[in-house]
Each structure stands twice: as C-alpha cells, then as structure tokens.
Image 1 (tube, rainbow, N blue to C red):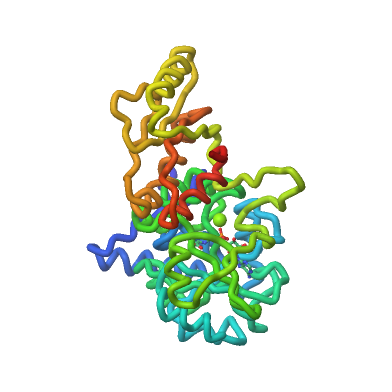
Image 2 (cartoon, rainbow, N blue to C red):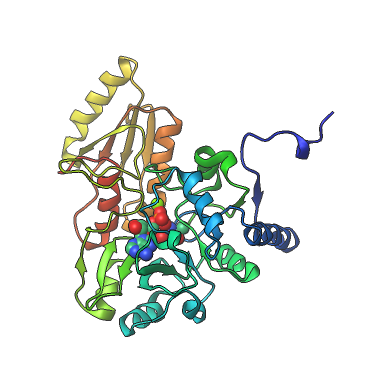
Amino acid sequence: MQSPSSSPSITARTRRADPSDPATLADVLDEAASILREGGLVAFPTETVYGLGANALDHEAVARIFRAKGRPSFNPVIVHLASSAHVGEVARAFPLAAQQLADAFWPGPLTLVLPRSAAIPDIVTAGRDGVGVRVPAHPIAHALLERSGLPIAAPSANAYTRVSPTTAAHVESQLGAAVDLIVDGGSCPVGIESTVVDVTGERPVLLRLGGVPREAIERIIGPIDRITAVPDDDAPRPAPGMVERHYAPQSRLIGFTREQRGEVWGRIAAMVGSGVRVGLIAFDICSAPATTNLLMPSDAQGYAQQLYAALHALDRRGCTVAFVERPPDGPAWEAVADRLRRAGLDAR
Ligand code: TXA
Ligand code: MG
C-alpha cells in the first residue's frame, strides 16, 4: 500500500499555519522558506488576499508563477519585503512622497511602484522601469519574508481573470497542483488587493484602488490622479469597446436597489422555479428565495473583507446568475464599487 505522502496528489499540499501552535508554525514556515529558496512556489496569506509567491530574484521561479496562473507576461508582479529597510535591494531610489506613504501605511495594503534596481529580473516588472513593492502586515507573510531572507514576488493566487482568493480553499480550487505548498492562515482580514501608487514620475498616480482608501493617501501627499493606462492586475489588454472583466465569478451579476427588493424577490423566485441556480448578495436577505443567499455587512470594510468569499460561493454553488444589492455611493465604498464593476456588475 502506498503511504499518503507518496500517493500522486491532484491538489497542492496545504499546511495549516496556526500561531497558537508555534512548533508546527515554525516547521511550516521553514518548509515554505526552503521551497522558495529552491525556486518553488508557495501560496501564502497576506492581509489583502492570498499571494502566489516565488523568489523575486530568480527569473525561472517567477516564470513558474506566470505559468501556474496562466497569466500573460505583459503584467508585472509585486515584490514583497519584510520591511522598508530592504527597499534599497529592489529599488534604486525611494522618492520623498514614497517614503511618506511607506511611513504612513507600511506594513499594510499599499504597493508603491519605485524605480527598479538592477537586481530585479525583467520578468518581474514586465520590462518596465518601475518595480511594485509592498511590505505586508500579515504576521505569516511577514514571518515567511524574514525566514526566507528573500524578496518574494507574488501576484494574487488566482487563475488568470478569476476572483482573487481570500482563503486557502479558494487557492486550492483554482491553482491546485501548480503550487508546491499552500500555507493556510485563515481568511484575509482586508479582503481586497492593495492600493497601487506609482511614484516613479513627477506626480504620484493611483494605478489601482484597494485596501488603503484614496482619501487616506491624499491626506499624506495631497490630491492624486488616477490613471488606468497601465493594464490593471490580470486584465486582458482592453481592446476598443471591450468591457474590462476580471476578478469575475462565472455568474452574470445584476444590480438592484433596496426599493426594487419586492420585484427582485419575485424575479428570483420565478427563475429558481424554472430550475435556474440564482445567487443573491444583499444587505438584507430576509425571506429571499435565491438558491444561495449571501448576507453582506453594511460597512465598507466589512463588505470588502467578505466580497471575494461571496463571489467564490456563487461559483461553488453553480449559480449562473446573481442579483447584487448596490452598495452606497461615496469615497468609503470606492474600492468595493471598483471590484464589483470588474466582477461584471452592470453600471447603475
Ligand atoms: O494585495 C495585493 O496587492 C496582492 C497581495 C498578494 O500582495 N497582490 C496582487 O498582485 O494583487 P496582482 O499581481 O494580482 O496585482 C498587482 C497589481 C497589478 O495591477 C499590476 O499591474 C500592478 O500591481 N503592478 C505590479 N507591478 C507593477 C509595476 N512594476 N508597474 C506598474 N504596475 C504594477
Ligand atoms: Mg490579481
């Protein structure tokens, strides 16, 4: 009989990293660090989403990330560091605005695009002169960076154009055997990706909304322009007239307002009655007739934390359509609105 460890695995190995069990935690981190040093791939939790990590200084290892995700090579990956003291190893300059933002938000959900150093292989930056750098706040991500002694290149650990993972199970279901080890650290506390600010030019520009609100950035460095000329995340290069769609579940998303509840409940009941698997993502799911009813928190941070898990649940439950109650307008909801739009929610 084969022992479990020698049987062919169809999914990646997942190991639980539990801070209340320090001996096992140390063992998991040691294994993860040695896989990274040998050029392998480790999925690990950060405070935003799970990352698919490789040694950022190893071209071949980073190439494996792109293959595992099915990601096109024109899209740069973020380099994660244990602290801002390591910036000089990956960037040749640390402009003042960047230092101010780093002081305010690192460790945390902010990525700064800095002028790259010669140590960074082309594949990491997709040939650009800027390198995306982030110091994550999650204790497991931090411990892995310290233990490996490496800068870790890591995009979100999802398949190309799919919803980012906020649990180890999400990573398993999308990337399975392509990863050498998945470190399970529970669900990610922020739940959406980092805010990306490019500080390589004369004026800082906002490339992606995310975990640090735009308002908080502007309190530190003043008004900031948002540009989307750089293809964001896993997005296929937008062709004219093509809707930008990624972070996307399989189901079609249809928005509704609180006032439309009665009518929407009726539509859902009729669809379910004719055999359609229908999802509902709402602030109140009382007596809702959908196949999968997902209750969302009423505050923007709580909503962001649960959003991707809700989208993953729609996929898991085989929903082909889902009704989404529109979140409020306003700056606090800007990043959530951005992710819902990319997930395919129609404009209001
Ligand atoms: O929260 C996050 O940022 C997560 C965790 C794992 O850190 N990572 C993540 O990586 O979302 P990814 O690859 O899915 O998205 C990275 C974003 C993309 O929008 C990419 O275009 C941008 O950062 N980016 C990375 N490096 C860049 C660079 N050198 N220049 C411009 N944009 C860059
Ligand atoms: Mg991504």
